[in-house]
Amino acid sequence: MNEIETTEGTEFNNMTSTTRRTFLSLAGAALAGAGAAGCSMIGGDDKSTGSGPAKIDRPLNKSRTLVTYFSVPETDDPNNMTDDEENSTHIVDGKVIGNTQYVAQIIEKRTGAEVFRIETAEELPLDHGTLEDLALEQQEANERPKLKASIPNLEEYDTVFIGYPIWWYDLPMPVYTFLEQNDFSGKNIILFSTHGGNRLGETVGVITEKLSDSTVISNAFTISRDDMDNAEAEVGDWLDSLG
Image (cartoon, rainbow, N blue to C red; front, top):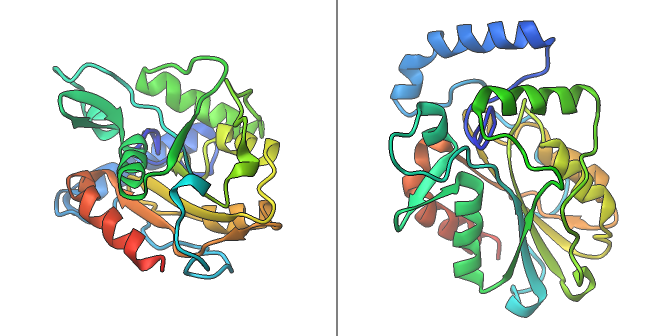
């Protein structure tokens, strides 16, 4: 996936399971030329950007800033990767990491913030088709997967970055769990995502509504799996634009 978009790169959308897969196959064939040219695959315009401010109201304090992210790279072996595995990962110093994980690391490096990885208690499958099916099943059941760990000291942070891939045009269901089991009241929330064509979808609006006691910055960052080589520069420009 984009790490599922259908991984961290190819997107799922909201139809029946069979119809979705048929649609994606047709869309992939019809838009192959556009993808090769660097254009978005499916969609591309964000349907909701949220109603919060575009800039933070205070400079980032590294000791009061936390970077959180959910990321599922489909392999840790840089050799002989499949197309799906390449779509969901980025190689840094010979190590395979997820696209969203890579963006989180760039933010960590630029801000000096602490980092927390959102992980499920039950290990997720790395096989692309199996992971894709599981993501769809969880979404259709409105499931809240149990998480492996919680943030022990969330009250110490004023600003929290939350990063995620787009799965079936939405947040991965473990991210819903994360949003609902933590108290983000009074905090600045800054969002970033990776995608395979659908950009942010409606996720900024969804998170703004869920975290109504927080200030969700509307200037969210999103980057295509096709542009990961430019991620460091693009993330840097975005961070500078936050104020």
